[in-house]
Length: 263
Image (cartoon, rainbow, N blue to C red; front, side):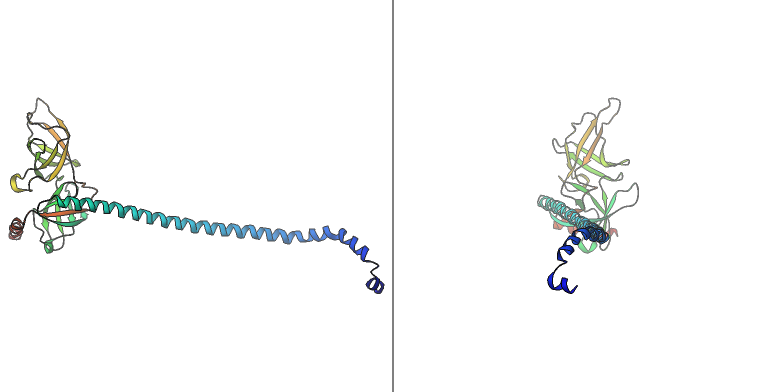
C-alpha cells in the first residue's frame, strides 16, 4: 500500500477494475433512478390535472362573463328600441318593468313596478317598443296589475291601418299568442299581412297605437262572420321593459281622479 501510494504501481489495475464494476454501480442505481422518474411522472400528472382544473374554472368564468355581456347588449338594444318608440307616442311615457306574471291559468296579467306613487291609473295603456300590450286594471301603492290584450276577457277596438276597417280583437283562450277578430263580416276587406292599430272607439285606448298583424282570414259562405286571427306586435312573452302612457296632462288628471273615485 505504501509503495502503491508512493509509486502508483496499482493505478493501472484500479483503472481496469473501474470498467469491470461500472455495470454493478449502474444496476445498483437503477431503483433510485426509476423511483425519481416515477415521482416526476406523478408530480407532472398532478400538476397537469391541477392546471387543467384551473383552466376549466377560468373558462367557465369567462363564458359566464360573455353571457352577461351578451345579455346586457341585448337588454341595451331593447331599451334603445323602447326609447325610440317613446318618441313616437303622443303624451308622456313612464318607463316600467314587468316583475311578475299572474299564476292563474286562464288569466293573462302581468305585474309592473309602478303604482299609485307614480300616478298610475286604471285603464292606463302599457306598450313595449313594438306595440300595445294591455291596460292597467289594478293599482297598488308601488305596483300595478296589467291585463294583456291576449286575455280572453279583454277586447281591443282596432282598425285596419290599410283601409280603416274596424273590428274587435279578443284574446283566445287556448292560445296566448294570438288574437281573434270578432264580428268581421264576409264582405269586409281584411287580408293576411294587414296591420291593426287601436281605433280609439269606446275610449279604451288612444287612437293609432300599433296592436297586431293579421295572420289568417278564413271565410265560410255558410257562416255570418269570417274567422280572422292576428298576432300581437308586442313581445308579450319576451319583453321585460315597457312604458306606461299618459295621453295628455288634462286627460291624465281626469283619469287619475276617476280611478281614485272608483276605489
